[in-house]
Image (cartoon, rainbow, N blue to C red; front, side, top):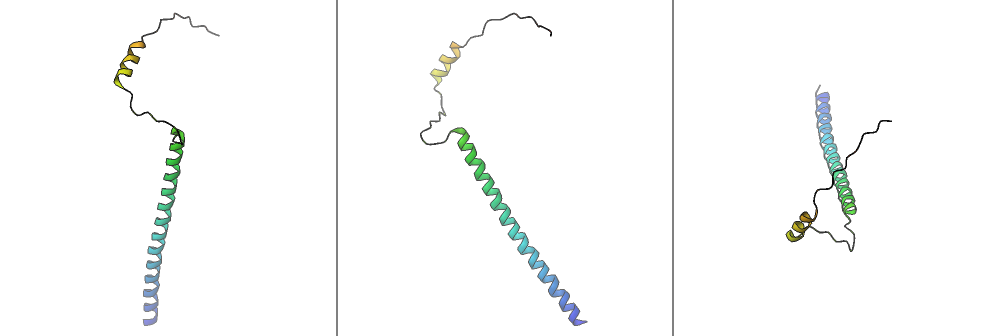
Length: 86
């Protein structure tokens, strides 16, 4: 009876340790996968924005230019149209 009890106790302890190790391994691999996917996404975004060598990004438009541009743009002419049915 003592042998079966010791065997079950050791089997339960080993299975618990194995499950914790497996959990740790899977979490670390999953985090590596997520980090890699995020890096690929950032690289793709950088390519879309034109973050290559020699490109210029304008983050600020001067107020004078914006005011001048808004004054130049006025409403267009109204064009009367008829709906043509096929």
